[in-house]
Image (cartoon, rainbow, N blue to C red; front, top):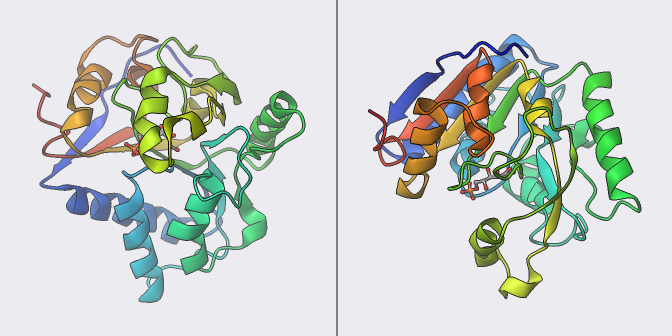
Length: 249
Ligand code: F6R
């Protein structure tokens, strides 16, 4: 990664559905060009419309996912893949069980690894062994986090165990029966790991993301806003809905 700063491409769509459609079309084009592509995938509310459109494309026979490899950004430490709030469960439920993906090509950190630190390092190494991530989908937190790289994460951070901030725990509490059930640690790809992806698409929708988007795109890069560090990557596309783009000048 060079230290030059690049302007990202910014696409603004009227609403979350249209933004999801645009990202799914970009992803489809990538898979059609490179059937054995390695995709980096995200969880959370934002990518759900993307995954729905990818399922539609598959059901219409427009795309074949049988040769793709996937690496998910993150997983909670302490949750098994069968836990309804684990990211492995989410991916199976929202995408993988609906398409013809080869399960042996799916990679998600193991929240129950005996040694999470060692597992995280092995996950990072596996990405490299398989040739790196060709196309990475990201969401963004309202504090500018990408994956679970919270503010102050190092620009060269690798996949590792991270402590979640109170803000992120509170935001994720909506998915759990009570806030005390929200895991406090996760295994997350690092910013350095993410920035090694060849192409990056960050999808953000809703007004809660508008400040983070303005900081990420228009302020100088700083570790205080992890997404702003994407300015050091030469091939980043932001796909936004009108609300998320509202504070861009
Ligand atoms: C998920 C992830 C997170 C989310 C972010 C936004 O794998 O890495 O960084 O992208 O927390 O979450 P939503 O989309 O639920 O607002």
